[in-house]
Length: 309
Image 1 (spheres, one colour):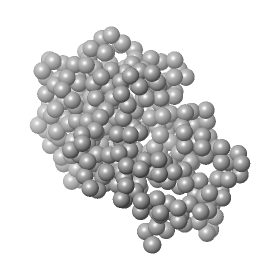
Image 2 (cartoon, helix red, strand yellow; image 1 turned 60 degrees about the vertical axis):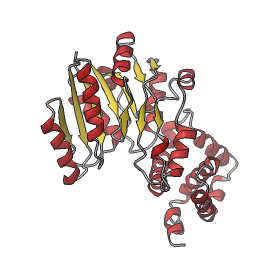
Image 3 (tube, helix red, strand yellow; image 1 turned 90 degrees about the vertical axis):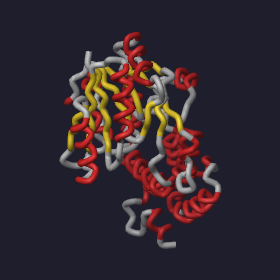
């Protein structure tokens, strides 16, 4: 039975990930394919992916004609996969020892379930320019196996997971742009009463982003969440809960009007103390409230306003 490993990738050299996965699969004598979903990365990166396909018979590349984002790329790759089981991984991760074996064991025990192995960070990847990203990952995103088992749907993150192909095709990822699609899909699994099984088989997230890039990505995800906030009605997103509480008392727009200077101050503090994650959460709420003013002619993108300072 063929295993399809699907890797959405955008401008990232995932050579080591592919070779490590191949090594583990070959050691288990698995029938497999690895499909790289090149999300319009450009010729320089496309040549890296094509070279991997030329070197390994199990690897082939789908080149998207335009950038579509990781969520839609996951769906596109599912339509092209041959395997009954799909193992998705992000491009900027590395498998830990025994990862494939652990997922195959879980597949045998839970053939119809979505299986999540979790992820962790390597302290050696923490640099001067990505300390905020590292602290956010370790303090907020990363969860122990016990925590994930206690909240199986809320703990779903698409960084690495196994699912039956038919399940992915019948329950597609949302067509809503980048940001919070993991939350949406996890909730969809819960509402559809589909099993999510958590195991101890983490990937290592390699932290490719600098803190500045992380802030920019966060704001892009928040804009997407704000645009589609009605879609997430009833879902467990703390930020939306705080925002709706402020809206209830007609405070969101007021806070949005003072967001720019407060965000600037928070950014300066986070540069010195990137472990102040509560401040970063406040930064996100301020930015989210500022999006209510986006239709105003006097509204300036907060990041741009800070860049002029």
